[in-house]
Image (cartoon, rainbow, N blue to C red; front, side, top):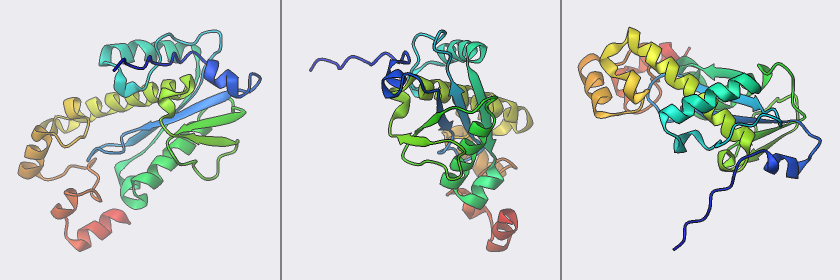
Length: 215
């Protein structure tokens, strides 16, 4: 079967929605890992300087992500925010993700006319109209750009965390449950940036300790 050609994310999809509107794309990275923050980015692209080759960050290699990240940061308006492990434990990962997205939008230097959000949920309390778009990072340039920014920033944060907790291999696994990560957990137990509400980390805590962590 012939492969379906990939849609070029060049801003034309946003212009088709409303050629006069200023759109911000919002995406997050880091729902699944056992450690580290969930990061979100909001991006308003400059229509005259949209980087070529924007795609969902998961479809890009690390070198290309860094190249596009630099181009986005040089030309676009960007807001970046996160929610840390303790917030994730308190709110659950969905709630923390929505908080991070709301913070990223608030961090933009100027508000958009409309926010396009990857996924099924619109965070409550946004100051502008917003729409959720399933697989939006494959449909809109501004969301793809947000996914790239969030991914690069989170990866950098996890490499920094690896300097403080070198045994877990965060510079490589960015918090996901790889063999190295799980082996370190079995030997050392969790560190300060682990998400204690995630299985299997709950098994390291007694009920009283877990309640103390979640307060």
